[in-house]
Amino acid sequence: MSTPRAIVLRAPGTNCDEETVAAWQLAGADVETWHVGRLLEEPAGLDRFQILTIPGGFSYGDDLGAGRILATRLGHALGDSLHRFRDRGGLIAGICNGFQVLVRCGLLPGGAGEGRATLTNNDSGRFEARWVRLVPSPGLSPFIAFREPIELPVAHGEGKFLMADDAAVDGLDARGQIVLKYADDRGIPTRDYPDNPNGSAGAAAAVCDPTGRIFGLMPHPERHVRAIDHPRWTRHVGDLPKEGQGLQIFRGAVDALR
Image (cartoon, rainbow, N blue to C red):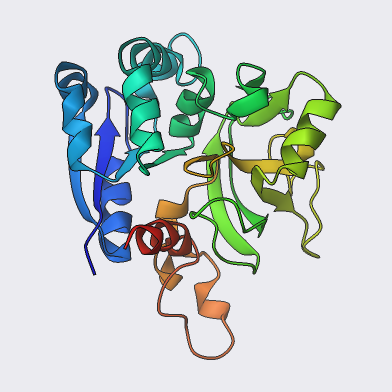
């Protein structure tokens, strides 16, 4: 089997790139980290890779809004290159700040919803850092190839996913593009705080484009790649799992490309 090659893109203020590299390595990919300036100078460099990831952090200090400056740079200079990357079978993932970038440069949600989504301030009016339960909707995106709920941490101030109206959100959900939803302890999707840390419409924690190959999520899967990453790992009943639940997201993408 071939080994997929992943590129992790960093910019000033990115602070989750090393954890994201480690997650891709654990999932079985070969990984390189590139500064956004290098990719802007060498857009053809994308041809060497099958996976592009924009990790979390505070790119450019989020001075004009979360992810806005990086989204502007990528959208203006690399928009066509990123679409070609997807169309040749490449996978694009945005985590937290990376999700904000993908939404703000128009790559998500894509299709009929293009340009009609945003990520805005949490309903709580403050930065939220907590663990959340997520229920998957597998089928469309290779990143979500599992069916059981998972738990991941969030850390964001602008994570509320919104579209133009409820009908647009319902349409996105009906097309299978809301691939992870915030859920309560019974596994029921919810907009209620604190199970939903930001108030996202449709309980959306992760969405993909109509092809499934562009994927963005607010929770941090790279922070739960080992079982001991979970704060309650010492209370686990039975044998401790060999890996954390977040690794399934990375492994699904790698397996799809082999």
